[in-house]
Image (tube, rainbow, N blue to C red; front, top):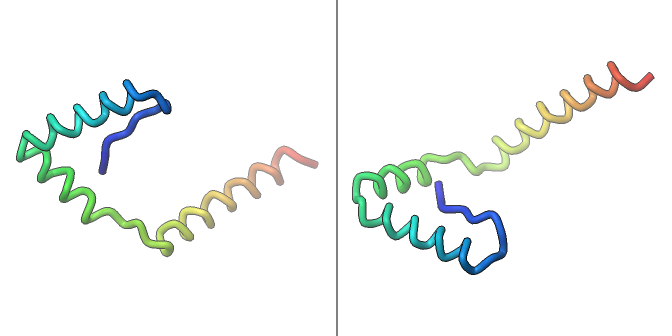
Amino acid sequence: TGFVFNTLDPNDFLAAVRRAKRVYEDKDAWRKIVSNCVSADFSWDKSAREYVILYGKALTFSNQHIQ
């Protein structure tokens, strides 16, 4: 859904901008990214469900390993 860079280095940022420009110039690839972005679920409902699952796994792990 986007273009990432891993460090706070100007060259790393510039490389991400260049990747974005190349994809933008490829209209099929750009449409795919736009479609992925608008169809992504960033709602709190989804996040909350994922947190419940994560916390359940943490509780299960702690119950099995900490006694």
